[in-house]
Amino acid sequence: MCDYAIIKVDRFIKKGASKIILVSREFFNKLSTTTFIKVLAYGNREKTGLSKSYYYYILDELRKKGLVEDNAIVFKAVIPLIITQGGLLFDNSILYLDEKNRTLILMDMGSNKYSCPNCPVYVECVYGLKRIVSDVNISIKVLDEENARDLRIPSKLWTKVVFTLLQKNLRNFNSLIV
Image (cartoon, rainbow, N blue to C red; front, side, top):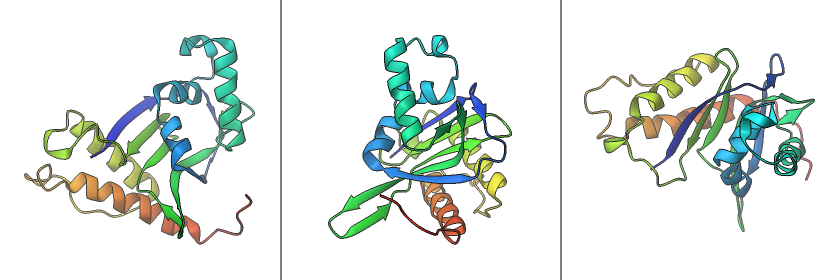
């Protein structure tokens, strides 16, 4: 089960944005709401339809998490962490910036909104998956199988993409400041 969205970005994007930002699952849930996505995607408050104070409150939250600097998006991907008594777990959800096409691709695997066998956004989901795969040079299984929906292959591949992206980039990990 998941939730998927692709959002056109109007806000400035820092050239070569390559940060992978890890956030709490709770913040990721907020981030995946329409309100937070609008503020992240649009640099112009009027386009969001939000009050001035609410818009800047959300923008301040995005700045504090390191997603926006100098009114520009500065990340490549946002991945949620689940904090447990035993430690930290990486969630298999992602908010990905496709800089070339100026879009945000959101895949929330923690949502119960859609399921592959009867998903109304299946084609868009596969498109988003292919965009990320081509952007970060990850090889995945072919998605054009006739029974890919019933076997929930896109769902499995999203998980693989998130963890492969983490694996590729955690090599550059130096420190965590809390």
